[in-house]
Image 1: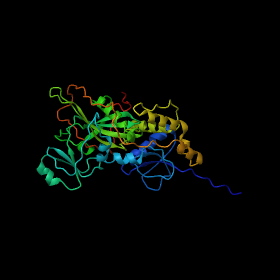
Image 2: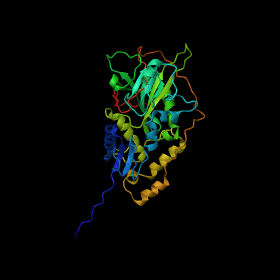
Image 3: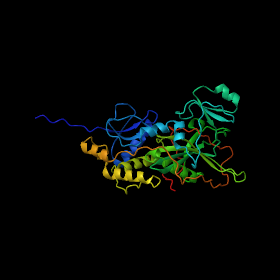
Image 4: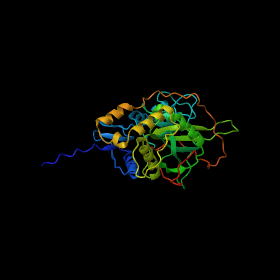
Length: 374
């Protein structure tokens, strides 16, 4: 008697890009450590049937898609100008850079960018006067004001809350730069900080950005720069949002990958190897979004979200449609408050510049297992 053919369940994938592949695999391994389930990772069109999460990948799938993260948000985070416009608004507790391609700068220095989708300092030029500008400038490029940062940070965010913060620091023995562009090629690396100097400003900025529907759920990283104020000169402290990142580096910091994995596992209702108390959805999320995510988690498990393509899963999807994206609006209770100034503790010349490296790895020079709590 001939045995019936075994029907294989479509595999569940983490979707990524070629440059983010190592970090996406680190995330996959972290999820496997927590759940014992193995997922596949791809950046190729037409391979994946179901999507458990997107880590910088914009591939569409014919099967089930968990919604972590949306293609629209990945596209927004991937373009510096689009992201700046998406989070702009009156009375925000942060500033965003203004990218110019038509006007000519009148104040210097300025930063010229050949592309708004590059990373790692790709296509960046610092010019100090109009003569240098005219000699370098090409049609289709962009320029932006150069910020002399006191400190620069990579802030990991998931579900509307800060997971942890890294500060960009330069390796010992290297000369101080007058106009630094901080990336690994110039000797900078990420160092975990428990209490960043601009911590309260960072918290307010994350809360404000996560109140925008497009960024209210899922995970991403923010690159920020802080500029210390002066009471004597009546100059307030400033926080500038440099850019966002849908796939920050994870390959040299397992604990950060574990935090992302824990969020994904809990929000999708995937069973852990060691049962834990389900993580509460952070109160930084709008109440409607909190209820939507809790309902979706209560109604479905990973076997029902991504485990099959049966009709009852289709019905679950019909009952829990994704939350529509609405245009960003400023909250009426948002207001600008000045940072409490503290004595200058950074050595002279450590101003940081807003060129980040989204694909680089974070090096933990502090207590690697410490989570930043507010």
